[in-house]
Structures are given as structure tokens and as C-alpha cells.
Length: 465
Image (tube, rainbow, N blue to C red; front, side, top):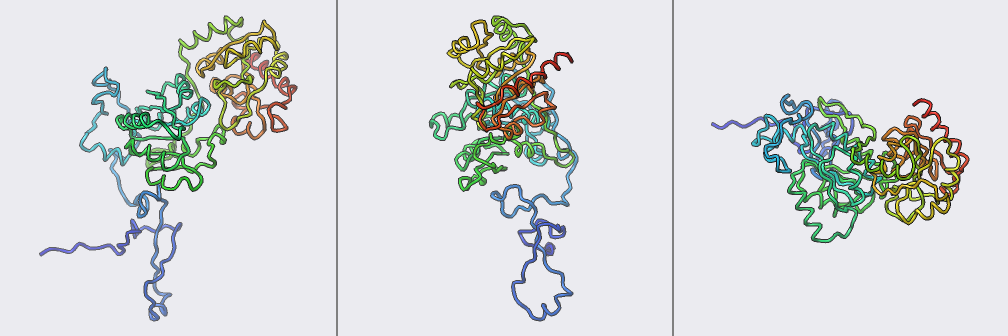
């Protein structure tokens, strides 16, 4: 004789666990039928309560109330971080590491521990913007590396943004593809979709503020976790259906957030889970190869300066794309006449003028003099190597300021307003950086005398050295 299974007290699909109640997000359900006798004894009856836990993404499952608080997990797959595989790949000539699985990795049940613990073996980061935006994503890449030991990180960036990753040893592959192009070539689009799908990523991150179209591109990668920023307006409709985690941007231009422009994504990446505490955000750091240092040393030696005895001048007005500006601060270049006035006040060291294009050399020699030290640099790697061998940096709001902070060099940062200075260089004193801002909101009106007074930071640094 078949036995009938016992049903719980509440079989509502909206309640994941009817026995566990939360004081937050609760409301009372009105009775379906009005009964005068029941309402006369309302004081003796307990009301029915419906619980609404915080949903990960309300678009995915309207009946998902989050994790069951009474669920018990074993320690094998649920606790701690994932383990890094120290073995060499089974096929050294294969870039994918053929059959490279962690110790004790069982293919038959791989999806179960990966889902429970959230392991990430391969991660792809799609970075919107140029050199500046990619440089500010370095702390997030280091956080991913710390949070998921042994993870392989790839990057999709623009042609200018890809150059930044010669300064990052945590990135395996950097591929050129402009995700900011709203109308890509169909052949390029389908080719990139197939390439990403064939790499079998566990997590794909995107810093592009997009809508349904960009969400569909991420969805076709078939990654388990698809994470992206979405529009703060009606254009984001439907994007959450194809993404596992979304961040509503405060504005369409994410770069306006300054140094912490990726704060929402970084908070999500470092979130605590079970026995793993919240992962701290590391500072911005860059690594410079020996070959890069040799190439740049030859350049500044030909310009007539010695290592540690020059000040880098960066931010000369030019129409070149190699100026490495931020999208969140377009007023960040000064004409050579202003720079010549600033350079006249440098004592004990020689100013080195960095030009992003050879056509600017004639202008610098005409204003400053033919004996001026000029270095032609277009890549962030060479700029970082030049800053690393210098005594300090005077620059506008360009990648040079962030590279000086990354290499812990004293610097003077020129901004068009105090607000921009606070956004792009927070905790300036800790970074040995003096922020000089214009009082009119225009960089051209910056006080040269204030810049000259700030040069004492170079004297202090030399005295401590």
C-alpha cells in the first residue's frame, strides 16, 4: 500500500522555507475569504507571513528567495577558496593546457562543486575605454587573482587599451576587440563570439554600460557568470534576463566616477561567502619588464639626462590619441607655453618633456629652446619605465599621474577643479601626490605659482633618499 508523503505546513511557491522568518521584508497576506467568526477571534490567531529574501537578480527567477538558511553543506566543496593546481600542463604545446584539471578533479561531478563554491578557473574581462580606464582596472584583476587562486585571466580591450597589459603579469591573453563599437562588422562580431565560446570561461566581466544587445553578446559566450554594467535608464530593459549579475551605472559615462569608477563591480568580486571573508581591494601596482627599461633608458640617455636626475613633464596639448586622457575628464591638457613657465622653476634637476607625437617636437623646441630634453613616447609601458627612473612627475589628469602613484614616485597633479582632483586621486597625501586645481573650473586658468610652491615635494623626496 502506497504511503502519502507528508506535506509542509505551507506549500506556497513564494516561500523557500516556511519555518524560518525574517523581520525584514515581511508583510501580511489578506485572507482569501471573509469569515465573520474568524475575524471575531482574530486576537487568538497568528497571521500568515510571507518572506521575501533579497534576490540576486529579479529577472532570472521571480520565485527565487535566495539561499535556504537551514541548508547544510559539507566541507569538501563548500568551504574555503579554490585550490591552485601546481602541476604543469599535460600538453605544453597546447595554449589551452589540454586536460589540465586540478588535483582530485572529477569531470563527472565538476559542475556540482563549481556551482556550490563558485570556483572560477577561467575569467574574461571586457574593458571599455582606453589606456586610463584599463589601468584603473588593475586592482580588480589583482583581486580576482587573490580571490580565485590559479585562475586564468584574459582581457578583451581596444587597440589602445591592450597596450596597458604589458604592465600586468596576471593577464594571460589580451585580445583586441572594441566593445564600444555599437555597429561592429558582422564577421568580426561572429568571430569574436565563437572565440570566446571556445575558451569555456566560468565568468565574464564587462565594464561597458550596455543594454540588451551587449547582454546578448555576453550570453552567447555561454559563461556561467555573466556580469556587466547596464544603463541607468529605460535602455537597460531586458538586459537582466541574459545576465547573472548587473550593476546599474550612476551615469552613462562610467569614467566620471574617477579612481573608484569600478566600485560596484569590485565590491561584488570581493564579497564574503561562507568561510571566505571579504577580499580587500589591493592598491594600483604595475610591473615593468627588463627589456622595457632598457629601451626607455636609451631614449632618455639620448635626450641628455641621467637616471634619477630628471622630472617628467606630461600633458602637453595635442590632438594625438596617445595622450592617455580619461573619458571622465576631457579638460586635461595644457599648451606648451604654460609648461615652459612651470619648467623654469625646476631647480637641481632637468625637466623631460614627453610628447605623444613627433610633430610636437618642433613646438617644444621653439618655446622652450633647442637644448630642451624631449622624449617621444606613445605606450603606457614606456611611460611607466620613464617615470620609474625619474625623480618625480608633474602631469595633468592623464595616465602619468596614476603610473606615478603605482610606482610610488612623488608627483604634482594638475586638475581643472577640486572635485576632479578628489575623484581621481583620493588620499593624495598617502600617495606622495600634491593636487593643484584651477579655481575657475578650466585647466588653462591654473595658477602657475601654486605649482611652483608644490615643487618642494621633490626636495623632500631627495633629502629622504
